[in-house]
Structure formats: structure tokens, C-alpha cells
Image (cartoon, rainbow, N blue to C red; front, side):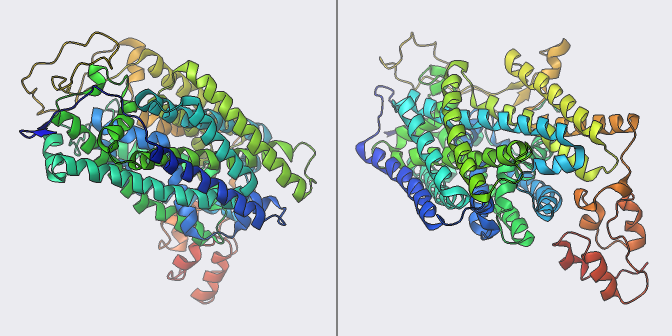
Length: 627
């Protein structure tokens, strides 16, 4: 109820889901399961792993782009991004700009090399470049990361919804996990791609509904902006270069771009879907189509956070500080029930929105780990002659086994008390070293097998120490202005004595985010580095250590390397430089070897185009190859 420009917020009842909400949610699960059954029947005569794991390498870029986007929009993103804006500010929005840098790295460096090699597992590249021991270590790191991540993606949203709405915790965990495992196992990559596309439509619908209804209650987006700005949540130009700043332009733009390059450039789940497209041009297109999609989703999530913040700020009730909920991760479910509970079916849409993020992330992850187990462990163990039908059957078995394993780890997560922020840090801690290994191999032709192995191990050790140290010590340099709780009505819903109310005077929000850099000393200062820099630190560590070890143990001769394993960086990003300048910038790698200086420009173009990656041909048509 609106009173004098403020909203009175009643905490006296616990909103619950209506039968219509459960029906909407059940329909979402049923549609996903139906897609899996459909492709299981349709492709029942296709028994190759290319068909099962890579959709026959014949998919259109649009569903692949939607599927790639859906993996970014996990349940953790849907719950975490609005909560980030609520607690801190809108600085996280810059990640949508960082995606341009990510797309450049993924689309122009990593995906072309994987596509040209025609591999199924990205770790097949590691074997070709650094040898089997490094490949095994990298594969184990990836499998451990994905199992932990999928388990938390499955458990965390169920926990948040259970705490706020009373949704049965293990009922939702088992239902989502079982349906996801079912349609991934029987339908393969095609089922994953089309189910992800449907789930992305649900995610868009849910977020738009949340923003539209919430802003309408407050009197429009103008009022939302005014309230959020007056409380210091509208911050977009924080240029503090200190790496301990949680979110600055530099931290999010550059640290964030490297972080997401781990996902779009070298993550098996993403690369596997990009490899399912008919051509390299289509694979690159699917990556670039994600940039506007990402920008829209991030912007929508940030706006949802502003609307959510303005709603509780107008009511003068901070549900976290007052104790209605225990952590910011539960803000979105609470807000969802507060504003949508009277519209039967809409909370079910938001429930489907949240779990659609989980479904898409887990399904792509299960398909990815099946491919890694098959290609990196089964085939090399004297099973290279395994029949296509047998390999496909084993892939399905691996999907089911890892689906059950995710449920087991989700049960274990209930004892660990894992938070959503720790999940993001974990993903960066274990993904950054792998990205560093691929960068070392593709961009530095002098790195040898010893440099790759030691660089990966050192980078992982450093990131585990730093990331887990921060999580354990709970160091933080960010201070945000508090909200008031004078508008919260004390009722029996709160099972503890209410905390003292804040003063009724409005705090000074002129400087919303400040940093207390001198709060910590000694080794604890190392733990204050923003989690956004984890991946960049990991890449830098892996590359530097890898090159130093390579120098000590005899560097790799670039002339002896297969040119398909190294990115022709300057040919890709500086194609208009004369050939006489680009030749020494290949550092001895045999890119363009044998190009004749005589003859027509068209003849020289044909020679170079045959040696470079497919999509460079279009650009090279415009180049005059005069020495």
C-alpha cells in the first residue's frame, strides 16, 4: 500500500506458491524432457559420437548462440546480479562492455584453432602441444571444477527458494537434476541446444516480468532511478585503479573480460557447442551474437536489482539487516514473492526462470564432462578402436553417472554452506589457470611441455591459496551505506529478538562506495584483491612461469611446431600490415610458408589463405601482398 510516496512493507506473513505456480514450473520441466525424448526418437539411428556430442556439426548459429548465452545466465547469475546491485552498486554493468573483448579473444584466437583441428575435447589440443601428463592434469582440474560448479548451481537456488518460500528443498533439487540428466542423456547435444533456447526465452520473460511489475508499483523507472541514485546505488564511473577495489571500470572491463574468456574461449562446454556449427564462420557468428544478448541480459539484471533496491528503500526496510532473510542471495526470491504473490502463475514463471538457468548450465556441463571422459581417458587407454555405437552408449552412461554425482555433491554442499559468491570465485580460481595454459600454447611458440605443466600447477596453487584465503578470512575493503529498517513490521515470522532500528534520519549517501584499504595488514592484504582479477592473475602466472621454465629446460623450436597449434596473432589482428613486416612477427612458426613474392596478388592470396584459418580468407581478399 502506498502512503505519502512510501510503501508500507508487511513482514507478517510467509508467501507461498499457488497451485498455478507449480503448474507453470512443471510445464517447464516437461517441455525440457519432451525435447530430449523427441531427439532420442528422431536420431535413434544415428550412433556416432559426432551426432551425440556435437550435433553432427550441422547446427545453425542462432540456437547455438542462445545455448551459449544460457550457460552464462545460470541461476547464480539470476540471483546474484540483482543482489550485487542491491548491496553495492551498478558497476557490475560494465561486464556487458567487457564481453566485446571476450568475443575478440574467443572468436578470433581460441575457437578457430579448435575448429581447424577438428577435435571433440579441448584437452586434445593440450596433448598435441604439451603432452599427455599436462593433458591429464588439465582434464582432472576441469572435471573437478565442473562437478562442483554444477552441484552448487543445482543446490544454491533451491536453498534460497526454500528459505523464503518454503519450496521443498530436496524435492526441487531431485526434480531439476533428474529431468536435466534425462533429456541430456537421451537427446544429446541437439536436445541441449534446443532446450537451452526454450529456457532462455523463459529467463527473458521472467526478468522482464520482475522489472515491469516492480517499476509499475513504484510509479515508473524515473522514480526507481531517483530512489536508487539518492541512496548511492547508481555508480558507473568508478575509475579507481587499485586492484583491491571490488568493482571499478578497470577491474570489470579488463579483469572481467579475461574471466569470461575462460568460459567462452576454452571451457569445454562452450567450445563443444561452437564446434557443433556447420562452419567456422558460423561458429564465430554464434560467439559474436552473444555480445548483444549478454548486454541485454546484464542490463536487465542490473535494472531488476535497482527496482528491487528501490522497493525496499521506499518501504524503509532492509530485509537482510532486519533478519527476514539471512543473506543477499535470498533477496530475489523474497522480492519475487512480495510483488508477484497476488498474481497466480507469475511466481511460477520466475521459479521457472531461476531453474531454467540451472537446467541450461547443468545440461551443457554434463555433455561436456561426457566428452572429456570419453576423449581424454577412455580412448587413450587402448580403446582408440572403440566403435561409434559403443562410444555413444558410453557417453550416455557418463552423463547419467555424472548427473547422479552432481546430486551427491549437492547433498554435500548442504553441509559446506557454500555461498554464491564463493561459487564465482571457485569458477575463476580453477578456470583461470586453464585459460593461461591455452594462452601459453597458442600465443607463445617457445613454450615446451615442462613449461606448460609447471605453469599450470603453479598458477592453480597460487589462485587456490589466494581465493580460498580470502573466503576463509572474509577480508573485504568495500563499505556500502546501510538501509533503514524502521519500516519493517516486527512479527512472529522472525524467530529472534529484532535488531535495533536505524535512526529515522536519512544517512548521507553522497559517496556510496568507499574503500578501507588500510584495514588489513600482513598477509591478509594479499587476500583483498578483487575476485575479478583472479583469472588475469592466473593467466599471467601461467605464462610467465611457463616461459621461464621453458627457457631453463630448452625452449621449443617454433619451426618444428605444427602451425595449426599456434595462433597467427598478427595475421589475424593486423592483416593489413605488409608481408615483409608480418613474416618476422610469426617468430619462425610456418604460417604462410612458401608464399611467392612474384606473381599476381590473387595468386599470393590463394597461397596464404590455404595456410591460414578459414575465416581469415575474407579479410585477406582485400590485401595487396606486396613486399
